[in-house]
Length: 77
Image (cartoon, rainbow, N blue to C red; front, side, top):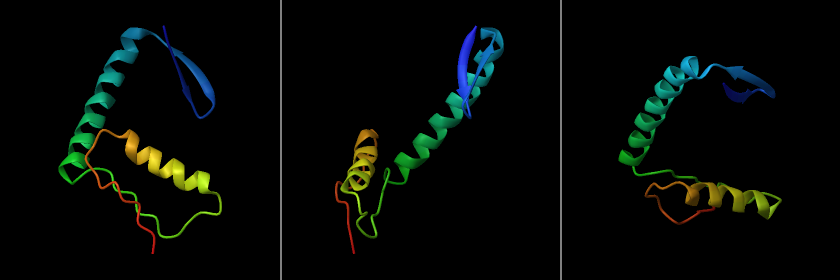
C-alpha cells in the first residue's frame, strides 16, 4: 500500500496501481525540469519588497534550492 495526501485527505492505493501513475508524473516533471533548464533556469523577479522580509528570503531560498542555473541577483525596482 502507498499512502499519499491530496487536498488535506489521506488516501491508500495499492502499489501496483500507484507505480504507473507515479512513473507518468515523474516523466512529466523531468521533461518540465529540462525545459526550465534549457530556458536558463528558475528566475524570480521581485518587483517590490514585501512587508515581511521573511517572504523575500523564502523566495530567494526557493530559487537557490533548485539545482538549475539562474542569476543570483534578486532585483527590485
